[in-house]
Length: 127
View 1 (tube, one colour):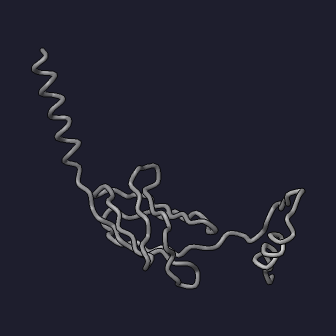
View 2 (cartoon, helix red, strand yellow):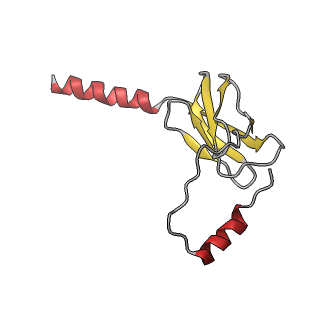
């Protein structure tokens, strides 16, 4: 009986290892076509992830012969999800920025005037 269970466990491990995968590549860019460096591309609901390089390129292994949903996330941009067809090997993404609205801004009660002056220089933004 132990021998049969051992053989079944061994065969189940072999079938898990034999799952085919395909490599999907692509580019992640913003709405102006500029490369997005460090964006996370992942299989929705899975553990496979990739991070874009200096040119916005990524490479990711996904299950073969199945439709897969890929998600791209990056700070300041909306989460983007696309469905990859079972035969596709490339998929590009164009991210849209989130709204530029701030909800709340708090300041410390005791402010060092020297540091505060430096901060105000960096915080000036033209809207």
